[in-house]
Length: 300
Image (cartoon, rainbow, N blue to C red; front, side):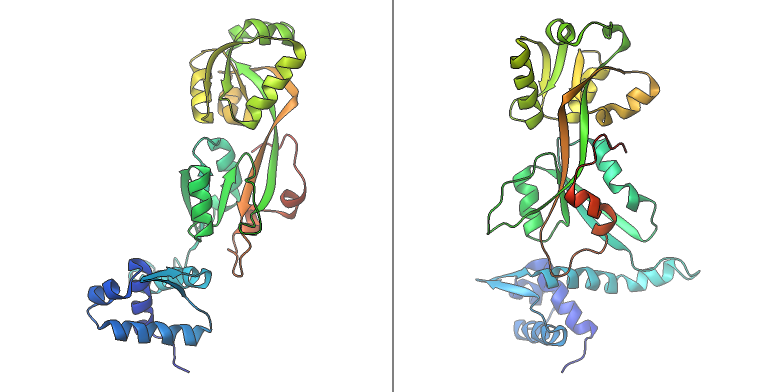
């Protein structure tokens, strides 16, 4: 069996980056047949397919994605050697995290906190729509996706949904708006800043208002937690949010909690896919407790 060498890795890395044998061969200045031979030799040495052939396109398998990470580190070894003459450094592990663009930044920070102080870990963060992020997860370009509603799935998309937090929801605002009035008066008479229609939290809030027979005064609505935070900071009204979204403002006294809405809550989920080679960093942020049960009121 052929031995692993940098010639194999160079050809593999070029094809992985270009997704095409011809372009990769042109870029590294060798014949296409030579690139194909090197790829086959590497796959034989590793005992696993590194690409799926889709017409003329070469798409990385899960093993191929892992091999590309290793190849990138191998070709960076020379620079790393210069930078680590004093004995510092070493290979860094990478966790690639996608999050809904509308998701609380404070929650994301709390999720990643176990990794942020580690000198041997790099975290890559990407924001986007649910469809885009799940596509990146399925293509093995992300290790985990953070959402506040688990996606529907079937046999073709066997998502693993880990409930990692179940946050209470409150009305929060500037102290001048918090008059000590009964909750129904706050809901009926105070301008409110609420999540946009279509979210699970907004649907639950609307049902609560219907049960109470209350028609609210909606000052603003947004599907972005960061925008809700900005609006309540600007005193546009009382905001319907999990306190974690405005934790810094609550801690500083800029905002206060007007009322806790015990019948409402916001769930946070981490979505993964079953993999033969799971990222070893995932267990540090996905604990057994998070996979089986919520942690009501968990703060970060």
